[in-house]
Image 1: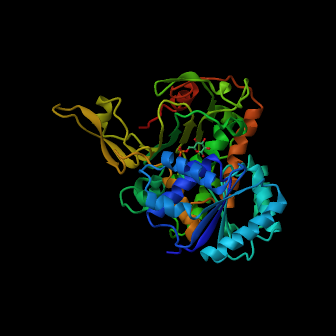
Image 2: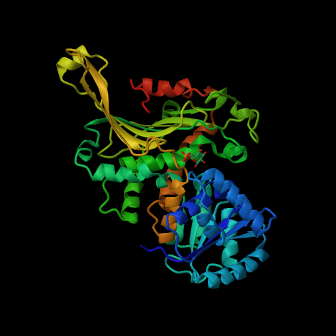
Image 3: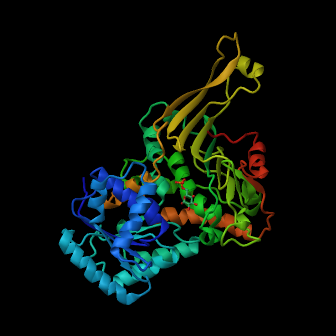
Length: 493
Ligand code: BG6
């Protein structure tokens, strides 16, 4: 493969993401022998600490966030490669020092000027860092695929800000050097989605409006907003989950078969889905989009506070922690098939699934007698269980003519603890080998903001009565009504 020697420069080295996801990902990659031989990590953070303190902190985090017991052999090998620098990202002078340090390590590790800049920082720093890197000549020489820049979400706040940000970054980096993270794309079952669809005979022929009644994309969380109130207040579930993760799942579910499985071919097909999303007018937004915010309640047997009482959240906050919506895709394959998206925090159970509900077309003698005969369902389970099930109707055991729904279930990780850093392992590995397939291209970001902006703009004009769902419940009543109007209900798990 194309695993080349490289230097990883992490801006935000003391942040949550580095501790929870990035370092565990590097540790696991090293343990699997999937890091290049010549490799170093330079972490830049704001904490005033020396290298040994930093390594101690990282070690503690690895103990918490790596699923397997840490092995000295791997940790010793990783820690030798980790360096720490402490400076303010806005301090231009320090980028000169950084340059010298990177050159020194480049020589020491023989990484041949191949650098990956990982921006694990709040978005207001994205542009500043990129400009400072350029000014300090840290990006030279700029080759077709090096240096690489990895950008965490959120990529902007709306279309306008995303465009501004993109301009700033593309002024310096060509698109093929930019890796915009959507960590859902690193999840095992989302990668498997294309194989399920295109490596089987049975699914593709029925994957259309002739056989499918509706598709539900659900990502429920039990966690609240935690310590991220400041960020979340400006974001809300629509920007935090729908604009990126949920629309990416939608695109992979609904896209046409690409001409081949190369990065750009897949991205081209995903973009067509975004382009075909029906425009929403204010009536559609009122009818098709539900927002919610959690109140106090009980989650996993623990009493939890309301969103408005969380740290850094306004006492009269109008930020949504829940969204459910119905959307339509205007193309031949999907015309007439509603797609329902639902995501929220502090719900009763954590799971992410795509559920395909087939039309209820049965032999007349069955449909008359069994009024509530269940439809066929195909579910792609993304987390915590990773797998697929198919629900179909069969004769009830030992009865003469009763029909009951039964499930064929494939679960590839049942009984095994879910390994949350895995998506990041895969993503980091992809960056190192220069594969952009699991990252979003600018036009994907652009079109998804266009879609989401229509909703957020309409919301600012309309007042809302929050909180409207109990923590630990299955969301606001209006989300059930949304489907009930179409004589449907939410599936899942
Ligand atoms: C992140 C959001 O992108 O995804 C978080 O910012 C959310 O608010 C998280 O909790 C969910 O990710 P996962 O992998 O736990 O489903």
